[in-house]
Length: 414
Ligand code: HAM
Image 1 (tube, protein in one colour):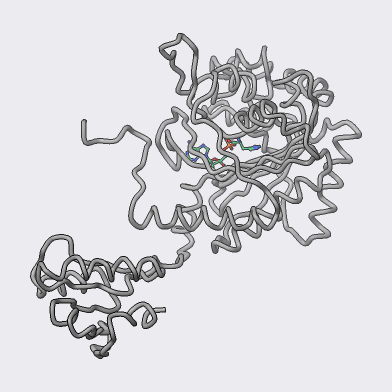
Image 2 (image 1 turned 60 degrees about the vertical axis):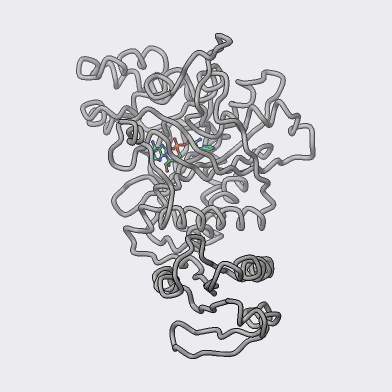
């Protein structure tokens, strides 16, 4: 037990860590070009933020949150997603008072008590963006183009864009009536949570993970048939912008998303097996819900980093290798240690990737080690090399040896 990590969590090291670093670097690079600034919010927030933000009737709030009372008797929750915290920070720090829009990105951990199966972790990581202050479908388009370019950059090819509109509060009234009429006909076969959801928020039934509920809602009325004029024209404009930009998509009237804050556009990038890699959408009512003095439109997405890695592996994408060790500096004799290490230090300061001996190994064992760690070159520094200011650099691939002055080693490797 003591040496076992909790179920649904992962240690990051070696090849997986390297992949994650590449993905995060690609995320930061593309956000820079789009002038989107990074934000880091706390790993935990007051529970009420998620209850209000994500929604009382969602699976996330009802079943999946890591909630505890802290020593000051406050109810605290580990963040199950990134949006609510970003919205709280946007409001608390008065970012809305600056010239709008405000475009923020985050790379965060998120905690959900889920059954750890098929790509569901209890601690996962998301690259997400929240775009505050624009009601225009161009904001959705910006996120979708960025995602398309981001996936191209890391080599993902198999994700397809699915879009839908779930309308606004106004459309929801007429839609809920139609949905309830449908659900009442099947009520006896719905799970107990869904029976409760019918009373409080019928849309949530569409997103239930229980297979029998899933089967029933396949024939439920679709939100897209109940859009008011404004929501309909927003969705039409979004589609014509995507068409003009040559971004392919499919309208998928089955997407409702699992969180309560969405209005109008919802979208997902889905792989060839129909598995969701990335999800997002517009949430024009959330800011007002959290702070009634403000009424600001917003749109965003979250892309699971573990899901990106799985998809890269499934598609057989080769990521850039970790840079190899350019030079192994072997140390011969105790008296050479400090001077040799000084040279190691100078090389590293100049940006050369260098390894050396920390275990007082014999020269033979050091060379074996250098070979094992894939050092491209080796050099041995002992008393003779130091007094002659010269050493022999061996190219490990060709076996070729070159005499280099010790004070010219940095230049040799640059
Ligand atoms: P979400 O769909 O709940 O949306 O999560 C976004 C992405 O995070 C998913 O598409 C998936 O890649 C990943 N993800 C979610 N749960 C897990 C899990 N248990 N294990 C592994 N990966 C997971 C949100 O969280 C919204 N905050 C997205 C958003 C931002 N909407 C607007 N702004």
